[in-house]
View 1 (cartoon, chains in turn cyan, green):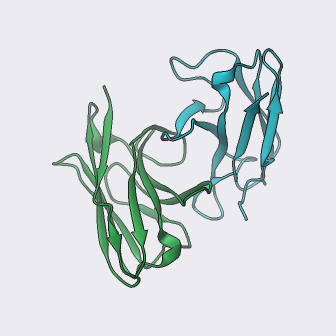
View 2 (cartoon, chains in turn green, red; view 1 turned 60 degrees about the horizontal axis):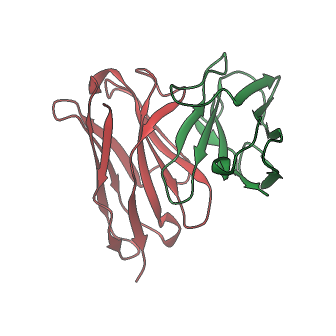
Length: 111
Length: 121
C-alpha cells in the first residue's frame, strides 16, 4: 500500500488530454513539492515535472503539466501521443516519515 | 554530462550481504544528495535510502532500516549501499539518482540504469 494514491491505469486516444491524480496528506504533498517521473517500458525512471512551480526539465514537451491543490496533485498530458505510453509515478518528501514517498504508479495506455 | 553507473547487483542467498556502488561523473558530487530507489519485478518504485551531499545525514525507509547502510566517498565520486540480512522481498532493480541540491527533500534527476539484486536460495 503506497503512501501516495494514484489510479493504477489511465487511457486515451491520440490527441486527447489525460489527467493522472495523486493524493496524499499534509505531511507530504500538502507541505512539500510534488515531483513526477515517467518510466518508459524497459528503461529507468526519468524526471518529468518538478518543484514548487511544476517545472519541466529541458527536453520535456510542454504537453506535460503539473498542478497541486492542498494534499493532492495532478499530472496532465495534452495532445496525447503514442510515445507517451508509460508508467507515471508521483513522489514527495514526507516530513513524518522523514523520507521520500511514491505513488503506486499509473500505467498510461494510448488506444 | 551527468552520468550515474550502478554496479554490484547479483544473486545472493537469503540472509546474505551485498554492496552496491554508484559511480558518478559530470557534476560536483559532494554538493548533491543522492538516493537509492528500488523496483521489484513488475511493481512500482520504492524509495530505499538517501544521504546528504556532505554525508552527515542519512535517511532510510522502514523496510530497510537496520539492515541497509548508505554511504558515500566524495573523494571518489561514489555512492554505496551496503545490504545485509537480505530477504526475498529485497529482490529488485536498484537505481541510484542525484538530488537537486545538498538535501534530499526534493526531486531526483538523473537516474542510473539500475542493477539487479536477486535474493533466492
